[in-house]
Image (cartoon, rainbow, N blue to C red; front, top):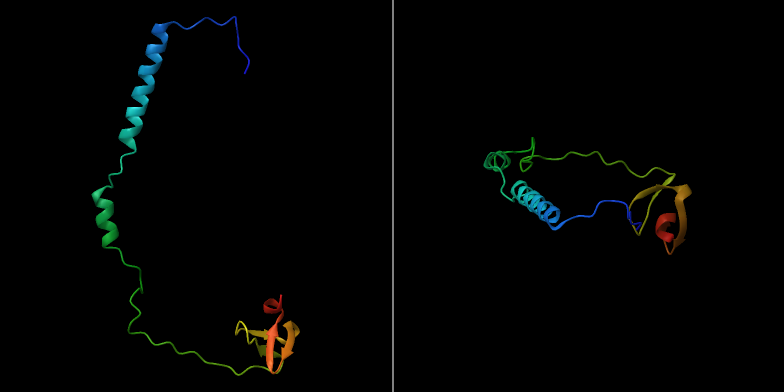
Length: 101
């Protein structure tokens, strides 16, 4: 770090003023950063519900399609892939390229 020898030197009084202002800044920062949450925000979050959050009475109806002739189900990850992603077949077990890697 370069030192400017032509700059005026600081006196003890200047340092006291600087320390006081730092202490004031620290006190001000501590006031703003207090961990107290606004009670209105807490109350609002407790009463907040997502739309459709209660799915206990819902039934899912999904139409399951049989595998197409050019598809296979990987015996490792159980995902349905196109035949072009078949890595190998071992004793009837079909494995995709992602699982073989």
